[in-house]
Image (cartoon, rainbow, N blue to C red; front, side, top):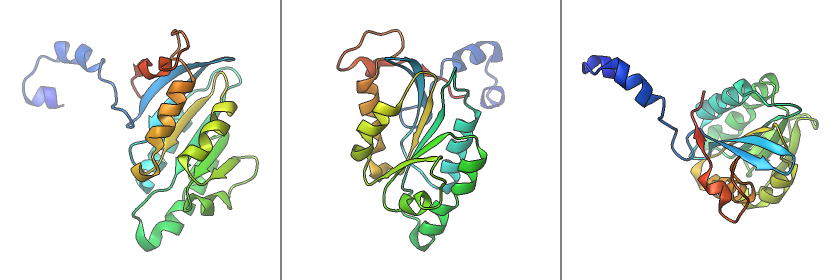
Length: 189
């Protein structure tokens, strides 16, 4: 629409727009390799609020795991919600249960309220910090999984994403200490 308004050549704009990738923390997808095969990481780590968390859950619901892969949500506290924080964190229960999410990891004191409400088969665990979840999450990921991470910036989920990128090489790359950092960003669909 913007290209049309300014009179740009749509035939030139459309192919160029196909190469636009989301920025870090804003829906960038990484195809990573584990010992058992490829999986997808959706990096929504930049920030979170009730509307964007629900949208991220919808995005994960629309993602297609391959083989025996699972949809895994890793959600951290949504900050600066004032007196409505408890209610708003609990409000994510229904979207998680109806979206076809297989496992949910929760991080932070506010997410503890949601953790107490989820069925044990859905809840993979509650952790205090992003650093606390790194090892359990890394060991749980397997071929075909689609994992999405989402939290307010103050929870430092960018560090969690960096740990995942360091632990798993980008698909098609050799393993090494920084192999995952150069993963191919795919357009969010």
